[in-house]
Length: 107
Image (cartoon, rainbow, N blue to C red; front, top):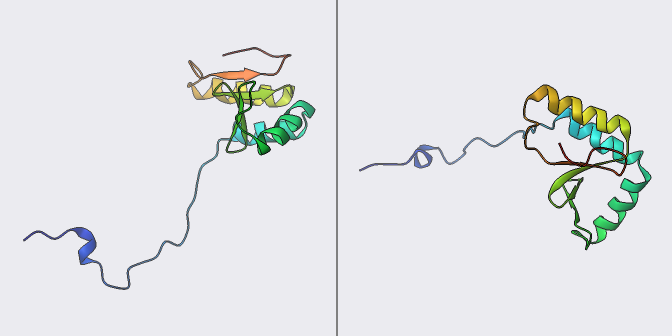
């Protein structure tokens, strides 16, 4: 007769003490950039009430998306951080990033 691994644990099984998660630095810089971008602040306020909106913007884990792609906004420093991080990571090919009206439309 075969027994599974869980059936061998004593009644007082160990408990989970901590959960950790990894958040890319560019993501933190992006969120900080939203704080300094009036257009992003306005979008965040509207998307907190109703997401997605009729224009195609949505909010996912605090990140604004436009038609499913990450929306960076008009904060130049945040744009530079995102571009540098993606360039250095080697995964930027094919990743959809949408900048505000002053930046590139797609990478």
